Image 1 (tube, rainbow, N blue to C red):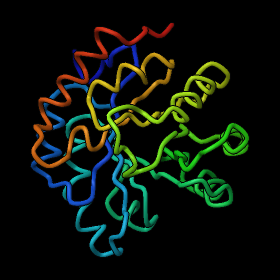
Image 2: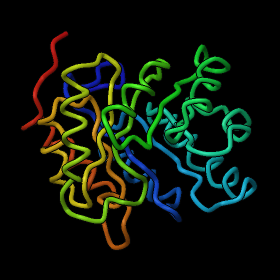
Image 3: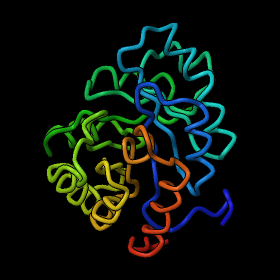
Image 4: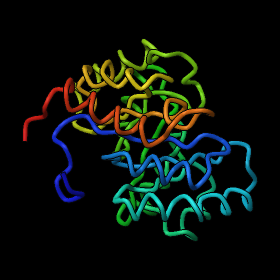
Amino acid sequence: MTLQTPPNRCRLVLIAMPGTQDDQLAAALAGGDVASVLLPQGDMDEVAFQRSVEKLAPLAQAAGAAAILAGDSRVVGRIKADGIHIEGKRPELADAIERVQERMVVGCGGVKTRDEALELGEEGPDYLFFGRFGYDTDANPHPRNLNLGAWWAEMVEIPCIVMGGNDVASVVDVAATGAEFVALSAAVFADGGDPREAVARANALLDEHAPRFDN
């Protein structure tokens, strides 16, 4: 498999945890196919956030994964990120789409209901994210996120990302919904784990179990 021929099935998105280091991300990216890396600002101030993503974003890009920032939009431009992630605020999403979608990915999260998903989807984001950063505290994906992902994937052409659990095996349940992407965070970056092995296993499970998409 090459970066020019991504797999024709649900693909992996990595979400950095607070404190994720560049060597952890580099190891994860060496484990196999990764479509994109989401880099949340969390509790970091602007200076700390920029310092962090200046190290992490180029690693993702060098591996052929899109570096998408969830945070200060000024930092997005400074480090030449591939995209920006907006959390559930329709006016902010609409503004980002108008200003930058021609040159970068604009995605949206913070969705809890079908009505919210449809409302945000009307703006035309590049993807919707079902889940919350830092809430992958169970081995299994949250049932609400699975249900929203399955409904959205069947009804709407805009791709969706569904948050997995803190166990790599949770990618199988997400892929079964028909979602285009499954996000892992703690399952890859939690203390004591092996990021490279986690990504390799996730891809092996997706290769074996994920439905193939129609071309």
